[in-house]
Length: 405
Image 1 (tube, rainbow, N blue to C red):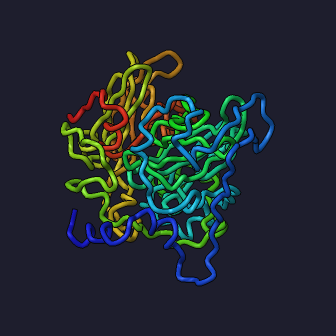
Image 2 (cartoon, rainbow, N blue to C red):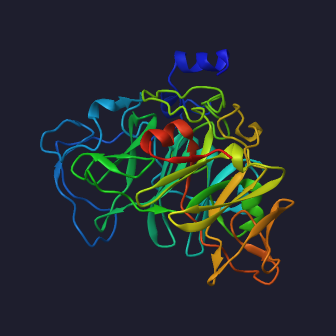
């Protein structure tokens, strides 16, 4: 990591800068207050529920409470990132604007996280998630938590229903292996963001259901999903320097992770970007460098005994490279899909910045949509994946099979 950028991290932790330093220069910047925790948390919901949650102490207040189930991780390994709970304020009442309105403040190469549930398509700009890390939303009738951990570069969407009870999630102010530690507001148990597992508290052992979502460039989203909704940066409930990156230089391929106290798996550089898939009993990761070629590239692979296809195309900026998110180096967009459609396995090749299947000659985009040809209007089934840094993924899944070519 370049000396001047390392100095930034030494002088002030990035989490404090992101959480609290925070305003766009206005003295009256608003922030959401941190929650007041209580000794005993009573099961609560934010909507209709079909189940119940246990009562018990708050893991936010005391993660060593003897009444908790055996933690899945050593509580001593949970580190304070600086701010208090919800000091990095989640967005609990998200507002949305049209593509045309968002185009006034989003640049073509900026990354947005796309969530599509039953045709309800929404984009969550990383320039907003950078400063809030969690958006509690409902998409296609499904309660979701849209999450982003800047230190791990992991953007993941989860259902926020646990044991039939709808809850919301907040930022604990703590980290585990440099990864965001979330808490649910029903029981105040602690959850790892990277794998959606409750690791300390009364809900220890529960795992959130992950919903497929992917980061694409704003240009790709507005061209391929023109009727989609976009999270509004002007009504977040807080005042932040949206469009800027407080973690400048974090995305240095030859750098080292920040606030990470684990052992780096030396099979790849710590800050190598990977496309990772977690399955039943196995995990695999593809180094991003191995997926990149020209304007677009196709990688055919197999996971859990089933074929998958990985699309990559250029045109998406790294949000963690320069202070101006839109000016970050081009790291491209990734989509992972099942190539089987209507019982037939398709084979793909890249043509320009699109993808063409050999069987029908249909042209597809990076979101897995057939945009022209015999199969126009159909879509490939997405495969749930995480795009993150190697150090982070390997710390959570050391048994991962790594593909570098």
